[in-house]
Image 1 (cartoon, rainbow, N blue to C red):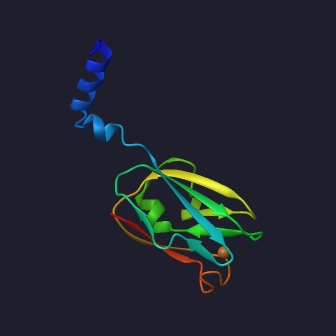
Image 2 (image 1 turned 90 degrees about the vertical axis):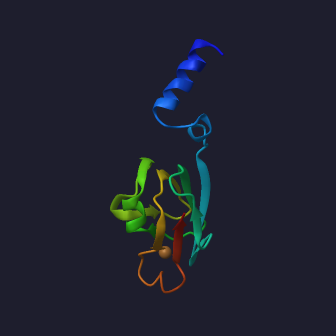
Length: 126
Ligand SMILES: [Cu+2]
């Protein structure tokens, strides 16, 4: 073991992390958006594990993914969810990287009547 590897291992030990935990890759979850729905439904995420959520709007209309409680409880490290929502123009794709906190959170599209037409979802973090 080289000095740097020993130093890294020592640092991880000090931080209370095992090397296996520190090397947990960021998960990737794609959320497909269309008129009028989301998939997957529900969305399952691992609590405390970094995840990049990629929202793909397959439709020629604007939509959003509104989940105020979910985004407020998460630690966002890349991208943004201003006002607790991801705005998507026609055929737009956006990503946000965050660490989710355990819980069950509702999500929906806030455009007029879209929720009633089927654009609602649930995020289950455990
Ligand atoms: Cu919509």
